[in-house]
Length: 97
Image (cartoon, rainbow, N blue to C red; front, side, top):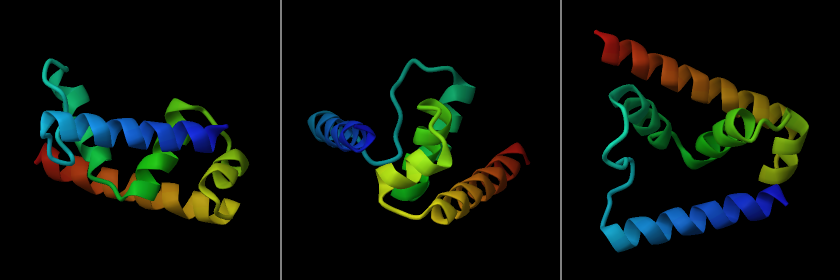
């Protein structure tokens, strides 16, 4: 089921971006500055990292379920999330300077 949700979300985002002519990484207007900055940072991550972040923190799935959705091993989910966290941490520290 989650694989279907992810695929449909990816399809809709691509369709919406195409209709609006929005470049990858750009966010919608009208959001709070901090929320917009966080979304921009997350959207700049590689696709697997973005999906892992979404499935873990927004869908609240465990590592085993995320692994099944993404078609990878549980250890890969752990490594993917660790890489995403590190990338976000570095980006946030750079933005704070």
